[in-house]
Image (cartoon, rainbow, N blue to C red; front, side, top):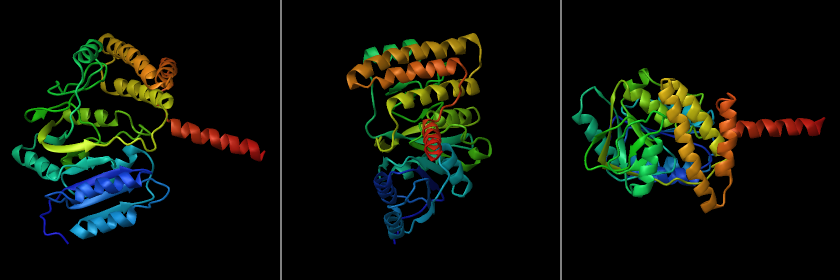
Length: 328
């Protein structure tokens, strides 16, 4: 048992079929200088080979673990599921492939203590902040497709792309958080919830949720708290289907959050043109034509009003039809 102090906070991790990554994430959590009051894992995996090891890690430091399996599948569904089954405050939502600096949790809580009730959430900075070349920044500014680089604006553009702050000299206000590390006062969830219509990886489900929160509360990013997103490739779908899904989410969330006037609609299509040209270069570099063909098919699907796309569900339905055909 650890004699380290504990806070009243809770960490929620939604996971699926990433046991090795999940264990490493929990290792960094139990190494925090200030432990949370509870860890809640919402697992939609077929099996849980890492559950015993995770329980041992938590028991060793006296961290309460609530492990929910089997859990309903879907990132937004799993996050809401965990929120409803915990009481800790603040609520930290992290991915299952994240490393936290030892004082990450403690530094975030210090930020909550500095502000009044207007503060709704705190995000950690990155251990290795990304940057872009000057031409890339100009391109992204020209097409309004956002991006991540130091001291960016933190504003959401009219086409529903965030100009994310990869690093900053001081605490910065921002319109949105990215989902691999987010934290909120619990009262935030009395007003806003994750949109369960967004399936799969829930592309931009984090931008959607936090943008809605930022209309009511202040959101800040602190450079004193550090985390690293490992961005594992485990269980990620092919580029073709990922691009189709991303476009479906982009159109859905734009209609949901942005005024549907000429300016905002034009910003959406102008931004997609800029992304399409970028993806041509990526496709050539990585020899993956799905980056381009996925966007083309996705754009036609959205122009015809297809709406949200769930490639995993499509695959399962196709497999089911195939099995029925064989049995007949």
